[in-house]
Length: 253
Image 1 (cartoon, rainbow, N blue to C red):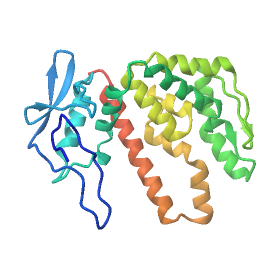
Image 2: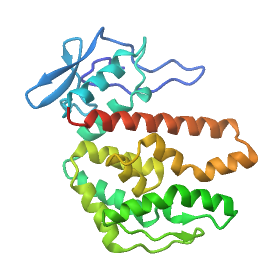
Image 3: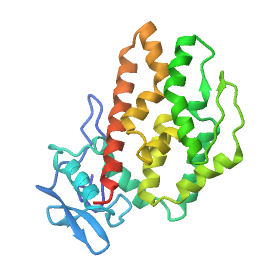
């Protein structure tokens, strides 16, 4: 397995009883460095590249520093699963040039069945918690020209085509780094409105995740939580905190 940063290996943790396939650390220092077209990350003095061999260039110094920090804290072996921002940049760099339209359409599709529009039939206490958390976000979206109609129950409800198009057009107008963050957030929360609220700074991703989990939190309060559910929840919260770092690192200096 290659340990060359120009040809990244399969960053997979070996399961118990198997050889650890994660590559060994091959550098001493990871640092951010300015280049003509932006910022890159140096592993010692060698510029990082994407898995597909693309030059690793990001638009802000803070994002380069954040990625460098992920590489710097690696131990004896490199675990890409712990490196959210590195993976996100890899995805941006290795995505085809014409992928933005498909990604924007994917974001818009979430609005067709947006989580914030499906209220529980009961009990009333759960529906009240949903509306307390979700109604202000739907109202906020209306100020942006995105009107999504709520309903009670799980039956699909058609949403205004103009609102779906408004979300698609907004996503398509973003640079590819912000679009990647938006798409990740929308999928994480199951809601175009929550993803948009994070991308535009209305909410943190950590706050958005908790709002997306009102149903699950209610069920836990009634029936408790098993170990697997705890693991999934904590993993999602880690992902949300990392997404907050992503957008913070993209902010203008």
